[in-house]
Length: 183
Image (cartoon, rainbow, N blue to C red; front, side, top):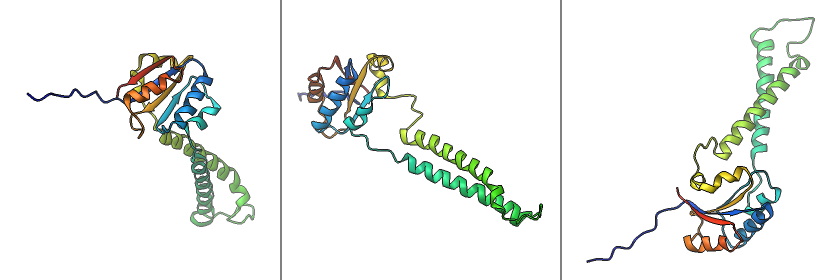
């Protein structure tokens, strides 16, 4: 009779819980130094050093917002130009049909409107939101992430990930608790 090897169930990753933001940043730096790249951190408030510690690059969202604003500028100006100089030209007070000073308020407002929409929808798209479900919600203690605990997650998709080694590595970082995250 052939011996059946028992496979471990798939997991999303391994997560460690820390008491202070300093411990979390220190652990994130150590994980990065150890070669882990698929790392995420969760905190009840923003921690400036954390982005650098887990290797988050600067976002390209400002460029997207700039293009949105430029599109709004062009849209506002060209709409008014078309309306007053091409489609329905009316001579009011001897002004030229292309009276750009009169176009400034609407052009400005559409610049701001398009830039704001670019910012909101760009942020939602880049962050993958809305996300009503994430595997970390399966960890019972994760509800403390919005109150007073700090969590570091190493995902199973990381090339260096090994279930036991990674859990041992996180436990060695003075974690309060290490949990497996089920998908």
